[in-house]
Length: 455
Image 1 (tube, helix red, strand yellow):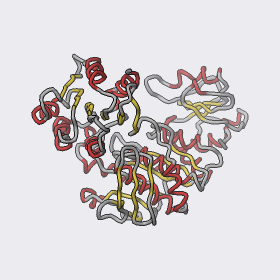
Image 2: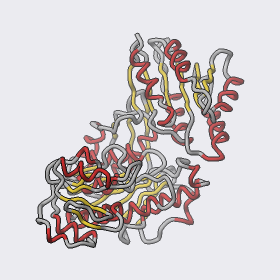
Image 3: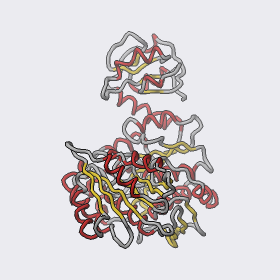
Image 4: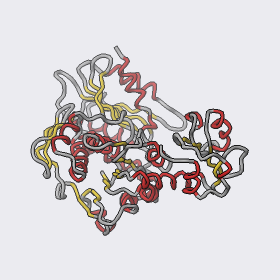
């Protein structure tokens, strides 16, 4: 990191005289005192504990100076708000390092698209990306301040829980190019409607310069809210960008796009991933990456863990694990993909579906609407787990043959997770395929682990 003590003090508007301290070059910034090493700047943020309580620990580990909202008996930069100072420092640093920022948001697919953009750009530029789920008001500035000194392109994922989140992140990062993957129902509990979710996602344009390129889904819902100062590129069946000639197999996709010649091969399943790859390819084209490099990057794609991936059960059954998060659009898409994949020889298709969280008052209804994606012609057994999903389980039990639908309850009084694990692991045979989909808080990853361990 290329920052000094005095430089940081000037950027954040220090309220004290820092010239009494040595103007040292800083190694890096950390808000977790456990990660501090010699030469670091400590950022004491307020969470479950007040970060100011850990200032002594930070100095014991080699911190040279800390931000602080109060006078402390160690070298410090006095500010009104440590988080705001942290964010201002990130904005300054991005401008100082002259790095080009590409931003990605969306109700589904943003992490995968971010990974694809990174891998494509990395063929041609020194590229860094959001690590893990560091996509909020703390994680984004942390990512910016932790990028390697020689970074040329920075791919930032932007998450949204409440209206205004994306506005803040865009103002911090000031992206020169941005992608919105989908206007879906994620966090509907906090927004009330898809239209408000879309308005929040479109705030990604707020920090962008006039004329910058913004990729948006073709969706009549947002027509009245599209920004006028950006160059808009739409995608979808009638959009500017289109996927064509899609061939889907169990663990790969082959397709074409209308702005490149020839086939693109992708070693992941799900036709929605063809759309994600199309968006990443277009970003690459905009920034000067060759078609050959784009194809090579996608053919050797490395995705963030816990997204849609095939795994093997201990007995040989195929597991399609998609347990990181869930919303109605994502669940519908993965069910469509799983249902269309040919079954293994003499094998069955089983699906474990758990509650989708943060859907608000419409949650039960939105779960029940999944019924249109469940067909006994494509799926042999269904296992439901949760509370709001119970109505969907009841509907499925009326359509599927007796003994093919199971429901396991999880609420404040009761959790039948162990019974779910026992039933599923006893039901899966070596030649079967099984899909698992639910919100992260439903802990289906533990069921994946149990399946991997069966003999």
